[in-house]
Image (tube, rainbow, N blue to C red; front, top):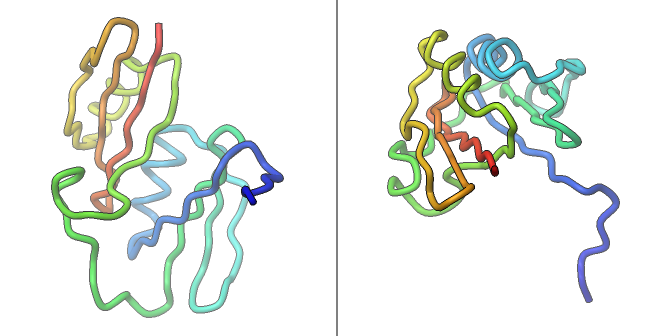
Amino acid sequence: MSVKLTKDSIDLGIVTNDPEKALGFYRDVLGFEDVGESPMPGGTMHRLLCGTSTIKLVTPKKAPPAAAPGGGIQGATGYRYWTISVANLAEIVERCQRAGVNVVVPITELRPGITIAIVEDPDGNWVEFLETA
């Protein structure tokens, strides 16, 4: 048996203690479309569109007892980064730099035709941008 998808993308939940900083990054710097805020059990969810994916910024009423360890890919096991395929990598990195976003991996050609950069969101999550020629 395999998973029978009803959508061609995934939705990503990001827990944050500072929704204004998270919105500032995902909505204002990256330009994701804000599709609203709603209450949820134990907190609030703010939804942003990234293509057909929804980025769900979740703010709990009570701060979680622990934070994910930093250090990106080498920092721990588990979910460490996510990738967005783009057509304007240099523009995105420049916009992030102007906004004071930490660029942890500058624009790097991994192999011919595949270029990436990785930035860190306000909660320390890594976001990779991938551009193909």
